[in-house]
Length: 135
Image (cartoon, rainbow, N blue to C red; front, side, top):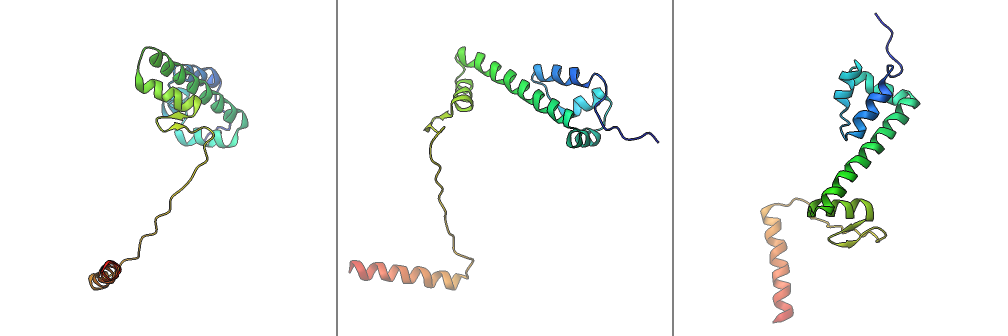
């Protein structure tokens, strides 16, 4: 039985970067082209720093390729592509500038489950209190 591969095979760097430039980073297809199983690919990426660096570089190249394509579409008048560019590069959305905006959150506390009788009493009490205040 052969020893498990610990690094990417020769030529892997060129192949992965070529895929990235075409905005086609599909790990399963890359594995097939390199003669690796997906399980081995994931293990190599986890354990080999050079493979990790290659994958990060490839993702950055792919991201740049996708943004360039979206930019070209936006300049041709594609509204969805323009929204993508504004949101991804400039933190803008239809809601306004969200790049440096403070985030807020809303918490809604829902009551626990209750029987029909308990619910009727709850509604009845609130209804009676409202009548008493207005009456």
